Image 1 (tube, rainbow, N blue to C red):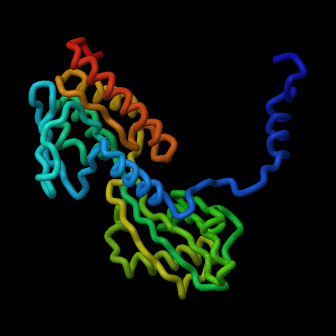
Image 2 (cartoon, one colour):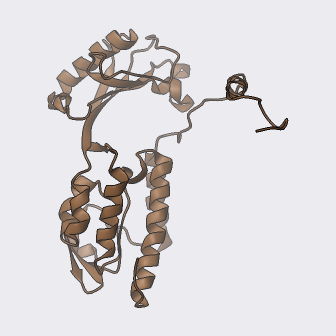
Length: 287
């Protein structure tokens, strides 16, 4: 466009951005991790007196009961109500399918087509004095012939994890697992830790011989959107709209696994559930 408001071309605009420096670390996080956020939310809910938390329970089935939903709950079932006027289903779709099928097979059917991949993440605390690259992390190409898919140099990426002032070593994470290949999850902790040392040495030149390691496995933890992903999500929502119980979906398969995306999906789900419940309670049609 004409005028003198900005750069004359896209190349000039990119050069202008690259020449601009921003102070501080690029990536933001909570000091102490997201567990602090979860603990704060639990505390706030518990002291409010308006909302009850039922922890350590499992929902085994959902069945319609008029315009409400009856939940079969195991665990501390005596502490949890059994009938609810509306539900937010925030489970991964592969876990939600047995529950949603009891409400609407039309809603469950499209969700069966959404694939999930598994992963393992090994948290590593290096010995003092072992240096790492001055990068936030490394992504490994799928055709590189390596078992690891990424290395996050955590103490470089987030200032609050830098332990050098106390004389302690760097901390990092190594991620394993790709779509249609869950073989890395078959390794026990000892074998997975040994493979982690090999990957760190081969990919980043890091000596992890004296490191402390903690593997964590996420079976079917990552949704993999395809070209028909939005069509499948929309189909599931229509299936839920066609049954009498107000139910909405909220999980990382809808808009991505990032924290901002998950917050946005949760806010939308809460608003949609209120709208559905109000429509149902006033006898109006729900679209």
